[in-house]
Length: 508
Image (cartoon, rainbow, N blue to C red; front, side):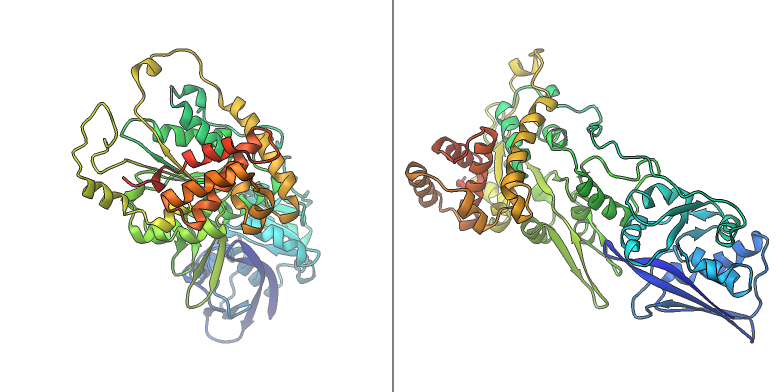
């Protein structure tokens, strides 16, 4: 007796169909799974056996062979529990084989037959549109996630008995309808607002420029100057996620198992803030079967690295590829995966080991050699990839005591949205949406400067010994500043402001 069930599995954030073949033959009772199953898949035999018995069905005491095709790709996770159980019931005549061909099954089984949620449902739902005219049969807790995209019909079931009744047509089930996303409602900001920040007007301006162009930022200042506070409020002035961006971000969070049942679609830009003791696999991604790291979880959002020089040097150097390419490639002996990682890097650091270099209120006890050694933890190539180097001084008492309301995040976001709109229109034909993504050919076309600007750039480049990458970063920053000002061309004052944001290009 042979049965075939269609399911799905993940490679990176993409999905592929898996054919679950169930064969029941004469012989001593045995349950074997082939097709490169990982640990959770191998253990499914015990969950499936108990779930079938506790749901009131007979488990065949024969030789059972499960094949997961294609057999040359490793299968991971517990999502094959439901397809295997239904396949066994189909092979014993309980489930209608013809009706079963119309469904794609996913779900983890508990011992009493309940169907538990699994990760990666959204990528499978997106890919299932190309797998023929089949409906998705999903755990009830995953139904909202599977119905986000306009794809196959989604049916939600809570236990094995409901799944059998649905496939056999014994009960009427209506396809699950997703609640429409509130695309026009700005995402929640957890009550954080730039209006709460006292003083630091030049830093707020720098963060506005960074948000308007999608630029990376490094904040440097003494302890307690407000670096972390400012960084955590940066998401409140970023443009809202488009539906396409939200869908791509949600796919990553679905693969990582981070989606909540209440919010199947990520509507808020991610803000990842790992501790400086994080491993390379935790930050970049990896493992024996690679999973997305924090740089991918921050896709379309912000990766905030506090105490920047305290991260291991080899981990910081791993940021070079995602900062330059917007993606991470992870290679293992069995496979290679690419995860998107287009994020804004926001880093914070002290100016020296003691933290008080340049602070008029405290004496710095560090020697120039100590300061240079501390800053040398950040390599030149890494600093070149950070567009804005901002000094965050201590806030004076008069600013702390000022009770006048500061400019709100909503007001700043309006200017950022206008500048982003100009950039999207300019870069539409190139598939880009922010100035930070421009390459050399785009810079040569859209970042031209007049003779006065060229003279200023020549003086600065020779005096500071800027690299070619720093030079292009200044041009992209100047383009963003001109966009915020509503100017069609880059002028000298825009270049001057952009140069001000390259503080670490100067020697100690």
